[in-house]
Image 1 (cartoon, helix red, strand yellow):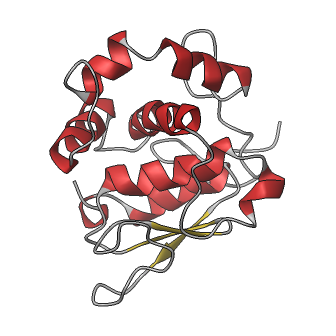
Image 2 (spheres, one colour):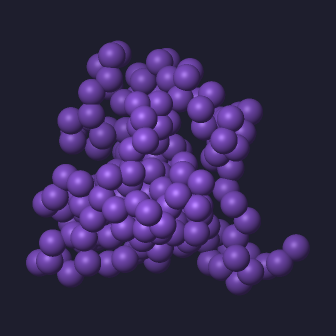
Image 3 (cartoon, helix red, strand yellow):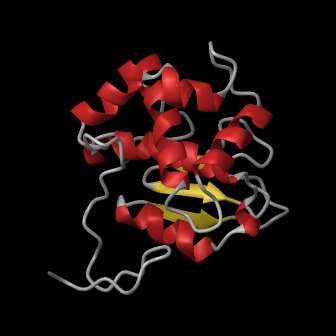
Length: 173
């Protein structure tokens, strides 16, 4: 699944919840801050750069690298955000969880696209890792307040007046 297959506004709104910006790159231009090149998403500071042909799983994966970082460290990120194997493992879980928050995407699609891209896991698939082999990564996310006890993503409060993917208008409480 590619960014052009979903609502750019929905993806941008989800990232904005975490204080990130989604920057649209022209379809024929190189993606700034892309670690993998080609159509893969890029990172510079608090911005995730993507083209219409950027895979949604790539966009979510790179965004999750920024999400798991303390905000003060995000500004220094350029291209490579991975701090550790533990972080990388946790990011793989979080990207699938965020897939559930994007209309028309979902966790199953993100996990299947991770397999198609070439992610490798001991149990043979991203879904198997997610469901049966990621206890340390779940704990890593929970320790940082990024998932709750039910293993659902903990979303920061939305800015007043923000329009969230698949949700009605958010108002101040």
